[in-house]
Length: 309
Image 1: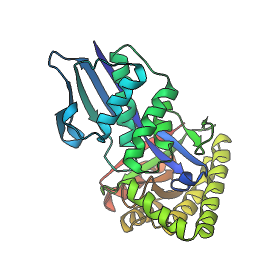
Image 2: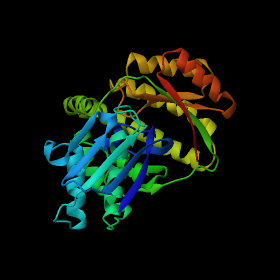
Image 3: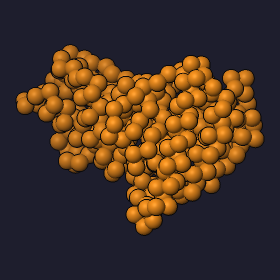
Image 4: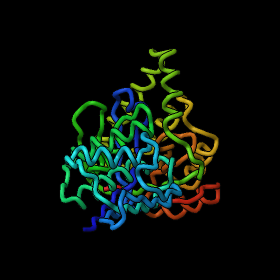
């Protein structure tokens, strides 16, 4: 039997990093990039994994016990009650850049969980998939918020507060975002750990910063639900300034944010862990191509134009 599963990328519109400290964040799926996983029965013993995006071609047992792919696969077997490990071939293809803030790790996890469980005719609920993916996020990020695996599992915009019930939401009117990739690989874990050290040294100061980010996220949700997306621009600018204060921006991200504004964006900010990866810009539909060209001229490795609904 063969099973195929796909999971989208994601961007955080508002609230990254503060979400780790129980403040709200907004995140949305990006369907223009995705992870695809094929799983089929094999005549060869063992579980063979082919993942070109990370230059991996290996049998499962040869991977370190804490390797994310090994953890995902073994956890899925445990969750669905498989004790006799089947012989499988796994092929992972992803158009999501690694360590870019687009949720590449969570997307691979979600697609792999669904493909394996589907191949073995033991399909899991969204809630089960989400929990399994979250366990792997701990390997990638150390102290994850859970927002990546949540928005990617449910493939819908979410309003997320760590430890609370997930809320999905929709915009009364669609709006357009241009994503600019710095081309710099920036694992989230280091930025999260560095900010935690700052917070532990001065909790009152940073709790105040996180409170301001949380208020921006709450206001943004109201505007989106009311279809007043044009007013999101100043909130994006304010959120980026607070992320700069958290030391998670970078000269490259700041340069692309400024270039987006210079080319007509209504607002712009980094998205995700920061220190590289991606930024995003709110644009009118007519300005999207100009902003995308401006970002490429300013040094973006690539751009993605996406509509949020």
